[in-house]
Image: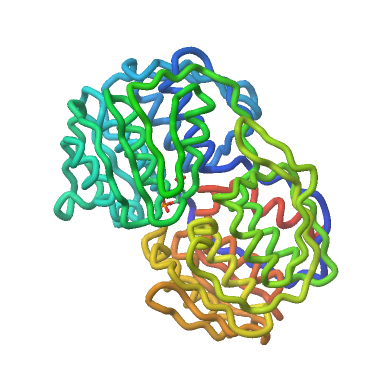
Length: 432
Ligand code: S3P
């Protein structure tokens, strides 16, 4: 459990400087998982040391994976191969991390031992049927609370058969869980999705030597694959950079350079959204790191305007809607977010949480069944808001505070350690 803290953010006159955001959370989880399942040693640099990824690391250590830390910078993981994991001798705690729980469920469903996964009060409320049902179609034996829909989950692994599954939701966690189960067994497993979700699993499995086929509408793997230890360099997290992109746009006279940010097209929806709103964001020094596209992002204060957001753009920016709604409060006109019902089942119900928090600061916001409508242009007032224990709500409201007319008090901010341990430090630095 994170610390309960209240923080105050005062309006900023201008923001300036260069920032290195921490490693990408999704890529960090996968680096730990695939390095553990590979044969031989992997060296991982730039890994996110947030609580979510530490949950994944501890889970694999509990299954016998040896990990050596080389300072802050590098982690050396001795992979055990697909059949070298040991049965954990206790319940595995996934903390707040949906990615840990859903991807591990896929991995463990194919392992010939018993395991139990649990998580914090927020994770235990989130839907797990979306991975349990299709894994059940592969023959997995997984029990859980609420009619096998919620954690804790008990997994009696082994004896799976491949499947072909059409997911009703565009979810990288669902897609990955099935690919990770399918890659361990004989035959071809195919997952179709309604819109393309982030493809880090597909990219990194290929980087570790597996044949994974990405095609319009889905991905497939033929198992059993053989993964070999690699050097992985994790790029900066665009979902963490997003807070500084919006801050740089809404605070006057600002210019920020965010270095080394992952710009995978399945994740870069936030750049498209903010540019469409009239934001000045330039991509510099574009390059590739361990199979992932990376760039430096230069952002300058801009007058934003309201836009309509929906369709394919939604999964490409799924974690950024809290901070998009803050940008929308500072934009002239109406912003409508639709096709985003998934926001209700994130770390908290992000539609309800953002409508409540922005409403506290005087914004005109209206929840919709599948998103929200924000009428911007009047700015935000001073006030007190609550993060609902959700790291991205806490950080989005800090950005709101930088642009508001008076101080914003944010309750329950310890949760930022989930994905961005040095967020408050960086926020202070660019105002100095
Ligand atoms: C993630 C996938 C997304 C995202 C989450 C991380 C991943 O969730 O919201 O923060 O690493 O695969 P869904 O797959 O539920 O959309």
